[in-house]
Picture 1 (cartoon, rainbow, N blue to C red):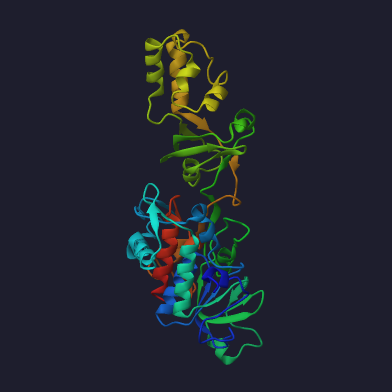
Picture 2: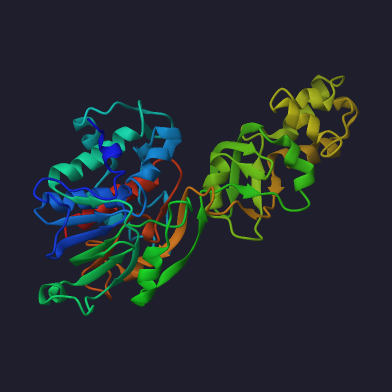
Length: 425
């Protein structure tokens, strides 16, 4: 018997009660997007007795779920706080939903399905087995509730019924949704089509639809994304690709203590991904390569205690050998530490505790985890997720201007926004 995620690879399928997959009368709800928020919203709306159609442009639903967390899906974070780990031009918007559907509400769903999970670090919860377990759970919930799920249905337009072939019943529906294959009619439409990250499966549909209805969109940009070398630094540091180390990374008022990773193109790793959401072009990022050490004081103490040791040998006690070898003759002259002047050691210490990295840019949506920006939440009800200018149209998940930190926060936003929206459809 095919698993739920395998079943979703057909061009369309339906659950009992819709044997041929067709339906002429308008759906109560049409959800555009078969990602985390769309699956949650569709299943919860159908559980309330509504007729629900979910359309996914790709060959299967839950693709971002399946590839997340190295294939194990960091599905939430135990410490998710809407006032701490989320960015938005309207920072209070997400509080209501995040309070109504908390991390433990999703954990309860996971436990009820018998999915084994573990905490990796910093409250991050991962599947023991596979991200497929989460995708299968959500799809099975849709199946049990009677959601009509159709894949390979790319939506090209959302408007009011006005086609010459529309029946009176169609005209009574709130919206006509046109895909590359056919038209559908629904009383309410939920935009759950995500943002622009992962371009192979992404779409700007939610932003285009919002603009067509004159709903403001905060300019989207890649977030949780690796940053690239500027033209001056690239020849100096590109050869360090593969080096990883613990560091403290800050930009403006945002600071993170996590690993950074040198690549051929620039800097990556959790610390860089986190701070990338706060960085803007032309700004400098401060990197403390020895976050637990006052480097200047340490080097001065070594000058007194171990004057015959070379500076590089001292640094290799706390930094990767390749990194120190590369710093030699660029950041310092490798003399005996006792031969260096206090001013030289202090300057090196300040550099180690405050390396200023000025990115040339980011790697863009190709490697971005999520999209920063989106539909302006000042034009959306924080209770129902309905667009204030467009009755009967809703937006959830990454389509909205709400972006979480790395570590399960964006999935929790997807679950919370999808669940809360479904209660008011």
